[in-house]
Image 1 (tube, rainbow, N blue to C red):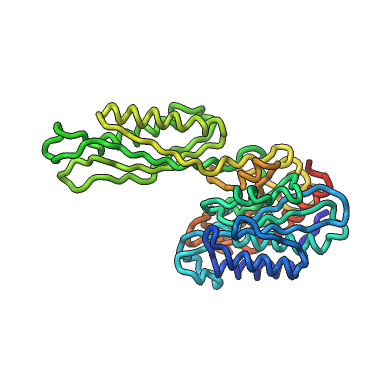
Image 2: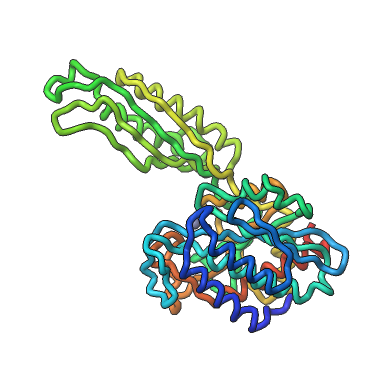
Length: 390
Ligand SMILES: [Zn+2]
Ligand SMILES: [Zn+2]
């Protein structure tokens, strides 16, 4: 059995979570959060080093032989002004922990405390991955490039993310694809400007851009397998000068998302064909630029199934299998490097006001979930170290 964390551990996790919540920092600016993590690890006697500028890698060494497990927590906040009404709200206007990364970091510190306390009977090694910049531009790739998974060599990794679809006491583990890739799309449509009264003397970029926006919707409805998820969203459109001037240029931007890596790779060609030929049909031209973002998160099937079973057999925590989402997560890079599993942590509670989705200025967390999260992280490290998962 994996016992519930000590009450002193949970008190400390709540304290740390609130301290981090008060002082939110954006990606690669997590200096205070990094210092807090380092102070806590020092106090626990856990060795650590820096990685990816504002990240921290900690190592808990079990006394017994075993495998190496990675536990990852993201540390960064969002450029949002908080309206949660929590007494420990952000002290920094325009910045807020609205995605739960404050809780993720605090829970990993809580798990570190529990694991260090049981080090004399722990199998294997636990690598604590405190990662910056999940919300962008992305810290996972930099952590890996700097050897976070190499010394010691991590053999499997897990992460928690709070989830408002599930209640405290429940976690979600879904084998296979759980988060989408997220690529940025930029389109420039070029025509020929002129007087609004003489359309025949110019090439209007506005109707060409409008037709492109509509035509791109056919990708999801006509061009891809209906059983494979894809999103093509145009988020911005801008162009033109005033009411009686024909626009010579329009800019569009959007996001392209998919779960299937092959479908994702095929999107660029589809977008280019549709955009360029639609523009040509209007006598205009168009330029497409796609910036590759995070890959899809694919949970290792065997690891996810085995960890689900382990949790059911060794804890009282409810394990559900929530539907995948089209959100994105840079844990994807860890899960490409080693078998990985993203665990969703239930936080929904009407009583605690924890009903708002991540990235909402009113976002709240039912702190009853923190104990469940710490226990889940400890369980993964214990089971992985003992060779019970892979
Ligand atoms: Zn987020
Ligand atoms: Zn997040």
